[in-house]
Image (cartoon, rainbow, N blue to C red; front, side, top):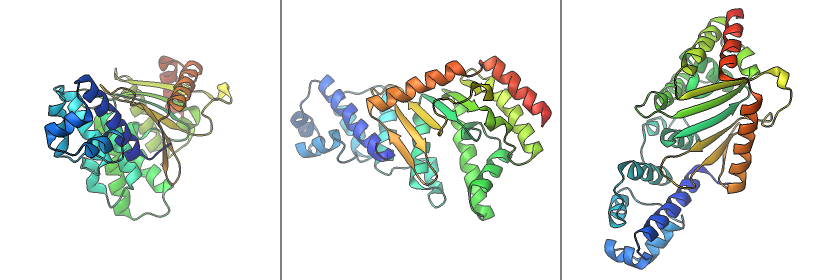
Length: 284
């Protein structure tokens, strides 16, 4: 259990070590190719230190890594672990480091599987709903802060509109649909938007009806991120009021993946879920 940058720094080091071995190089040989001390290569591969932005391309060249997508993902991992830049950094005065770290994970993930028990997932929220949730979650925030946080929420949704979009599978407790957030008009628009988005091929939406009763995950939401081209990189994010936990151990990941499969099996089918959403929307 680690914070986000530490997770990616360690995973980046593991991947770089794997690539070095595949290239048939020792850490000493790699260091000589780059004019580094061997200890620098060792610190990077063990996750003790990150990789400077200018150093990573040289290291990947030395290891013979030519795959552009792989280089891009490794670059993002290195950037986030070392405090590099992303569009979210412009909101550094508004959103905390852990939220910025979550966004950077989300921006490079291939798939996201999420359970939500109280609110619509951020990637699927309308502006009106996002504004109402933000106001309710914070204690009297200034209007400028609310505006900035809503901007961040909407900017995150670009991952669903990218040429190679994030594949999102969301399981929602029925309470998410019935909790009136922002008033009837906001909820009607939000429920209609859920139906519209669920029609997209890369979004799968299922509802856990009240009739299911208790279920695994009832105690809180979670997200499972999976990443392209990187071995053993999947992780689980648990959100709390003031922080997030990142679970990376294989046994933790397996437990949450098994839990999500159970949730998927007990939830309504996507088609029946959309019917339920439509029925609730008609009654708002």
